[in-house]
Image 1 (cartoon, rainbow, N blue to C red):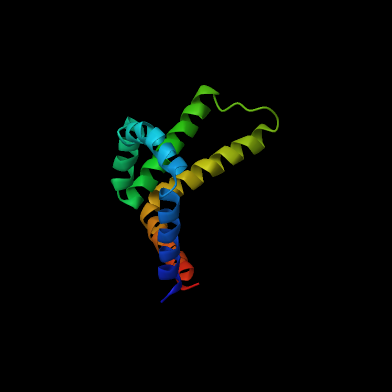
Image 2 (spheres, rainbow, N blue to C red):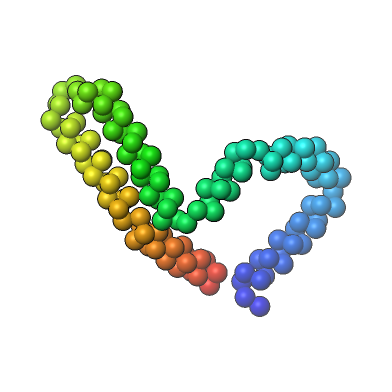
Length: 127
């Protein structure tokens, strides 16, 4: 039996013990309307729609939204910053460059993220 199977069996035993107690059942019954409201909320539905999008598209859309916010901020402040202005402008240009690079490289970033997640999951299940 591997470690993850043993943990799952331990968790199932703990859940069984907890669910046998009246206090836990009372709290679950009391929380049930809140759980239903949460499951039916617009925020959860939007989260489900967002997570259904491919990862590279989510990265690209996030970079676009953040980049738009930075550009709007710069336009509203007319790119004027307190001293040192040159340093502040260099920082803003650098931030915009990183955001643009993220949007352009979304597929590569998504692939690296998936690879990292798979490796982390393999390490944690093998430990």
